[in-house]
Image (cartoon, rainbow, N blue to C red; front, side, top):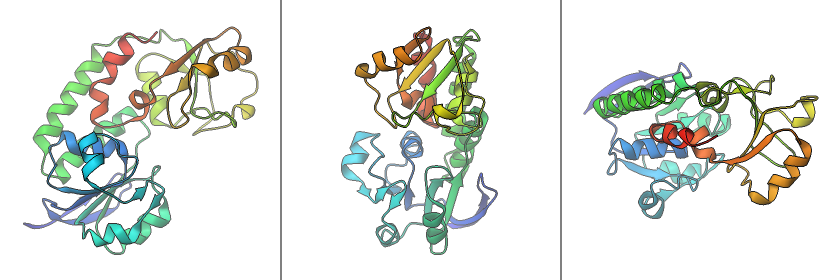
Length: 256
């Protein structure tokens, strides 16, 4: 085992012992990716939101939430690599951890950036062949999907009261565009519906996460958008970058 330097998606140079043998993952979708890359024996810590795979959730050490990490417990695991994300984790936590252990960060706001992340983590963990095969499958599955959205406009809600929606420069927006929808929100990030003015989308998507929209919310949003088709959607297929993307097209195919 020697030292190697990698550049993460935030442009930071990270020197690690290669290949890393004690990994802490602090992002659920990336934890799922590490499982896909067959790193069972190398991942020693995950967050309480890393629910996939279930066997890891039940048996791996849980070190707090993505934005409320138990920093001392992470350091006690003596990781030779922590894998995080710019949006999911706080700058304060990452800055603290980076003073003590190698921290590699993803920064994902598009489909292409997610593909890049899979490739980079494959290289980072010495699993480049498995990662490459996964990327080939993801791209092929999306290429075969076709134009599901048919240029219909959509508002994608991630929270209720306040009603936050998905805007531009986000991974979810990129996924909507990838399958043929047009985001009715022209603002960036995750604005409040109140900031958008009058919008009349063809579809309104109520995501299952982070706010758990249920059937009981349909009537409320139908009143708000009487001409729109309102649908509860599986937020994991729209927002989980990583190995979950390989199965997303099968979900989208029967979506509208």
